[in-house]
Length: 137
Image 1: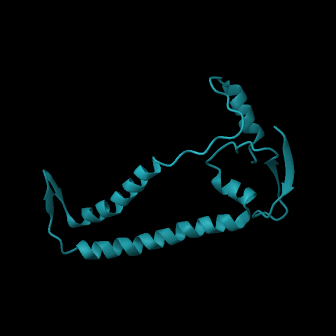
Image 2: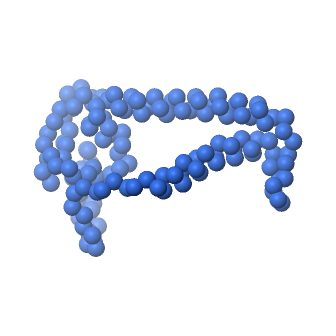
Image 3: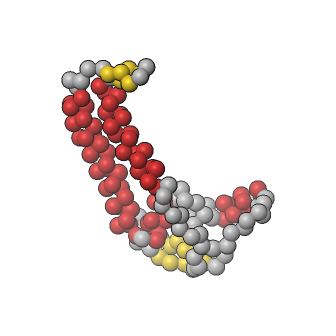
């Protein structure tokens, strides 16, 4: 793979990282934090972290408000299922998530870039040697 070396404003001042010169995708989608730091700098990472913290706080506030609202409800039956007041909060929070997940099924997946090895089996030795070579990415 063709690579260039670039200095980024990562958490370690002056750290040098390897960045692919072409449009080759990163080796793992799990490395979102690392990729954001290298590709978009630390501001994107700060916004991502703020979203986690803000979302956690907002969930406590909204969940507490919903629980206070349903606290006076009596248990209700939906067919053979008995639903208590606190379970209604879980349903209220879960249904929008399911609707969003169903809506995401309609989103077209972006076109993949780079070379795909369709139908080709890569030996484990080659996979592990590639992981070992990119251990600092």
